Every structure is written in structure tokens, then in C-alpha cells.
Length: 80
Image (cartoon, rainbow, N blue to C red; front, side, top):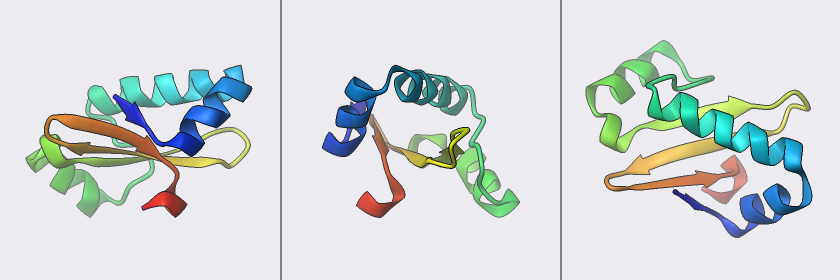
């Protein structure tokens, strides 16, 4: 797994956010794509090696987890 600089900095500064990232990664690797449309979920299911998951923490902070076989990256949507 790779994380962008902004994700890494927030994870280092906030252990609760870090836990959220790892829980989201677990969901992603289990085929739970988070807060995506049914159409996007179907696309992810058809090609999980190129999936995009979206997860929102309890404070409303959204992250994306993007697979680009074989690399998985965690990023903020603004970093796309």
C-alpha cells in the first residue's frame, strides 16, 4: 500500500485517522467499496484490480483507495 504525503502526514498526526485508513483498507481488500454508486461497485466487482473505493470517517473526512494493479494507493479526493 502507498499513501500520498497528505494522507501519511495526517496518519502520523492522528492515530484515530490512521486506524480509519487501515480499517478502510481492510474493507477495500474484502471487496467492500464503501460509499460508491451501485454502478461503480459493479465496475469494481468486474475488475477489482482497478477498483476505486470511497470511505468517510466519523468527522466527514473522505478518502479514496485506488487499485492500479498491483499498486494500491490511499489518497484524498482533492489529490486526484
